[in-house]
Amino acid sequence: MSRIAIVSAMHQELRALLPALDRHQSATVAGRTFHIGTMEGQPVVMALSGIGKVAAATTATLLLQEIDVQRIVFTGAAGGLGTGVRVGDVVVARELLQHDMDASPLFPRYEVPLTGRSRFPTDPDLSDALASAALHCLQRAAERIGEAHRPTSASTARCCTRALVVSGDRFVATAAESNALRGALPDALAVEMEGAALAQVCADFGRPFAVIRTISDRADDSAHVDFNRFIAEVASVYTREILSTWMSG
Ligand code: ADE
Image (cartoon, rainbow, N blue to C red; front, side, top):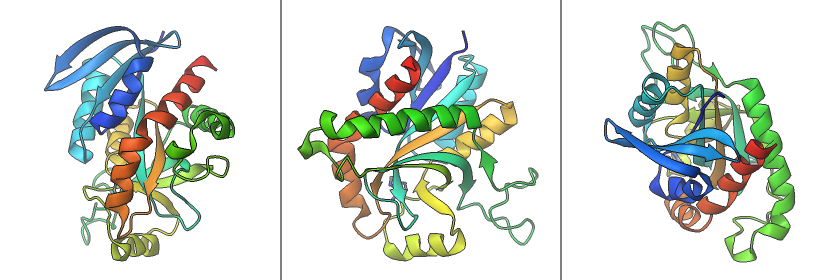
């Protein structure tokens, strides 16, 4: 059966997912521990990538080359960019772009040199399956999540599918920067620091991938406060439930 990797950037996110992994063994390569087992009966590897594009690219390469994983799902938090995107919403990426890639005037802004592309599509089947699991979980969330752990009213949190998610080696923490990103990339719904790097590596290997993120902040002047609160209080709740629902579906 094909093995799926579930990758997070931060310890808090991985720590929340690991209890869902059965028959646990591990392998360490290039300083990364790969937790190998099953989730809802499906072969799964969980790994911490670390933060940023290089860390994500290295982790993806190891998973595909050394751990023999067939599909990769990147999970975690993202800053909301789209005007209607709120803290607590779940975003499933349709495509990824590196917002800090700029080799102009040699190549168009955002284009990854020598690939001819700036946008890398996720696997539609994988993304659709994750989106329907997320929708299902959000519908149950009002009963299942305590008020104290609810980033917004869970009954009004939404799942944004078909999203452009942009990645860069910068935590976007000013309204000026998020406004500039919105101006330059009006269809971008969320910003994070790893997804587009994963996308480029998976495109090179011809392997399916998906990115599912929960909005932790609005990438504005209070982003760091909202992000830290979110990671501490909420990271454990959403993603594990969504992934378990997807795996058991
Ligand atoms: N991940 C979560 N929030 C983010 C932000 N504001 N900028 C970049 N990555 C993020």
